[in-house]
Amino acid sequence: MRKIPEDLGRFERRSLGLGLLAAVLGLIAGLARPDIFFRAYLVAYLFWIGISLGCLAILMLQNLSGGSWAIVIRRLLEAGARTLPLMAILFLPLLPGLHHLYEWTHADVVSADEVLRAKSAYLNVPFFLVRAAVYFAVWIGLAGLLARWSREQDDVSSPAPARKMQSLSGPGLAALVLTVTFASVDWVMSLEPHWYSTIYGALFLAGFALSALAFAVTVLVLLTRQEPLRSAVTPAHLHDLGKLLFAFVMVWAYFSFSQLLIVWAGNLPEEIPWYLRRLEGGWRFVGIAVALGQFALPFVLLLSRSTKRDPRILPRIALLAIVFRFVDVSFMIVPAFEGPGRPIVLLSALLALAVGGLWLAAFFRRLRQHPLLPVNDPHLEEALAHGRH
Image (cartoon, helix red, strand yellow):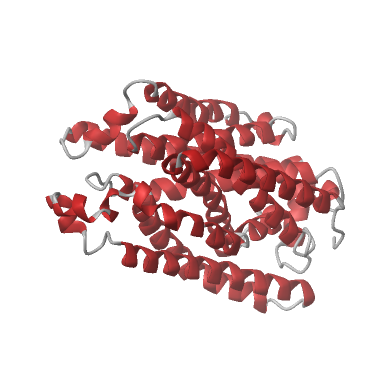
């Protein structure tokens, strides 16, 4: 169980090479239009940090539930959460672009706008940076403590590390929900500061969990080509993960539809412009594509028990969810800006390869530092027996 596949080192090197190449191309493309560069970078960054935060959320959920359903992906979740220090560094390129992204950073705009003046005590650059530092401190602290105790668990057969992880995960999950809510307001909702939604944080957290689980399922099936996961992962494990993926698809759809329904029913002039910008012109078709690709199609496919247990089909559904998570993040961000949307989307796809290459390199580096199965976890034997049954 302590064997580490040799493929992980090759995946790390290839990801790093792809990330560096795409980063160079993205920087060259962004020199001509810095405004488009920063907007595209925000899309790419939000997509990948969403996977990191989703991994952290599911990891703490598993520690709280104490079930065996996520034992086979626990190392993947830990490695994904431990990329957060890298994401804190990759947040820094956004700082020179704050004036290109947020209208509330312009003193002349704020002075002429009554709404922005009323929100200026919260929406100002120094406080924005302080809040971002707090978010990353909480996220990195949670991921670091869980990773440390998980390493302790590999070396001792005591139940103490598991108890510590469970004790932290309750308040940790509450802190994660709170900080992700504020971060989504700061980084995305404030792009359009006259608009607001009370379900916005929950919508982002559901999307983050969906993309993280879809990523974990995809990598898990990839790693089952070699030991120790080849003999450990069975169709029963995939079935459990497929059911959880189905649940996250439903939760995301529920939050999305609830927000749309409330805004549509209220029909208030301060709320409907957000949807009008996204339901007119070409963005209307993007919205329809998100509804089909991130909800309708996965929903129909995951209804089948055989589909959830099939190692050939389930990762393809997961990849579909990942692709449309990126489309959904673009749909949330890009229409907030006036001007050409297509160049931003194209550049954001390139920058997603850049950030993603670096993210994957860090992920695989973390993953190959420890056994792919938590060897002394009190639920490991139960999980393996469940799979065999």
